[in-house]
Length: 125
Image (cartoon, rainbow, N blue to C red; front, side, top):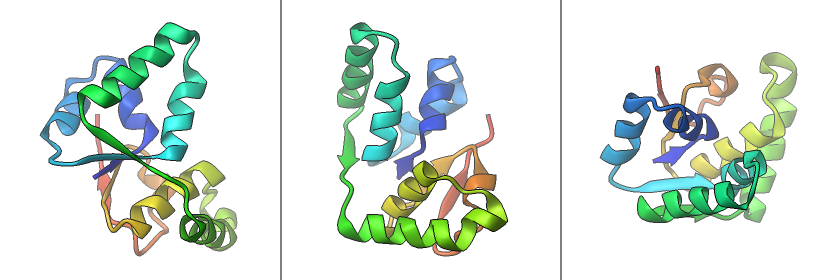
């Protein structure tokens, strides 16, 4: 399963349900987009280290941006931005999930519901 950035935010806020979602996953993935978003929100080097240690401790695999992911994300932007307001970061995360044939866990279903080929695990905190 790929985890959207919001799941990590719920864990940081102490949401036990989000923590269990991660703990119970057999395989844990995140898009390089999510990885960059997590690091971007850090306020200092200690928080960077905490994020990296957390991802390592739970065995997360960071999935790289590929040409196919970039192409698919650009199609999502073209097809869905006007109708649903999907942003480029969400399009990259969704394309990463679809290209790797993995479900996406997110509490932001409205960002992803238009994408028919995406298997979405809607998280409700």
